[in-house]
Image 1 (cartoon, rainbow, N blue to C red):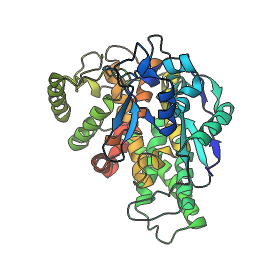
Image 2 (cartoon, rainbow, N blue to C red):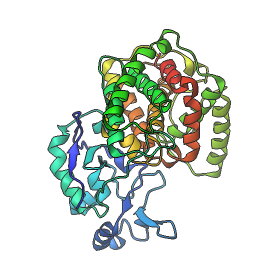
Image 3 (cartoon, one colour):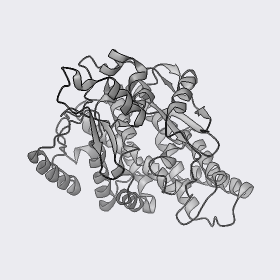
Length: 415
């Protein structure tokens, strides 16, 4: 029996508006039922698909299958009007289950699973549509049909080297949630408060702290984190050279996830990629990233103050971080083996990445809502992007977090 499904304690809204973005640049994994449905649709006999591979095998041993793509990265079934051909010809239930689920995302905990939204979908990022409570019945039905139904997840450790129970994890998650959802402060302050909380928690001896004692400690650390974070904003400092270099490497990874990024696998493009990676490492000259239609900007110009952003521009970014923390997905999905504090730092690093990317995309103008929605799509894809959940990135985040480095990055790029 699968876990019961709940919506988040914050209101999320969504309805499909047929943009087709979910059909571009994504890998649609197929289970046995999906393969049977595709086989019954007899696409190999269709004149538009005769001789084309509809399904691609991934891996040799215990490899899976996924839908084939066109050279531009779009799904082979995507029509020019943004609709899915399977959906048009055979109906919603004929599509692969992953496609039926999107943008719903299941986050399994111990006693239940949250259903939240992948904000790679522009409608989800903009909160356009009905409240998620109205989609819960559909989500429950899809989960029951899913072969890999959500089961109780193992609790992640709180800090490195210490095993934790779900009760401990939820105490810390609640504290992080209160800090990040505190609308008294702008988002950057809330994230910095939570980063300070993580730093303080790591310094504590947690071996014998359980139950009410951990609750008391978390409450005390919350107060201390808010009290002690102000100095970072009184005198905002640029990141030191090592942190800046690691940060640019992270940005370089994220930019390939931007929805306006066009992949190119030619040998010429691969050589240019190496040249661009070296330029990002040095942080001098023009900040070019092939495949992105952004104006030319220098690394020096991208350190400028962005200035105050309107509430409408900030809202999609605020909502992405709030939903990520409320659902605990930052810790229990792609980074399940990471301690909670390290997973939170990796997620919070997305804020300066987003602010840097807005500078790059809007070199000669003020950011608009659509720019923020595209940045949110990039952050959302980064949550499940393997290079941003692996050992190399974990070491990179750990190095940037020393001496409040991540908090300084957030404060600096929020200017």
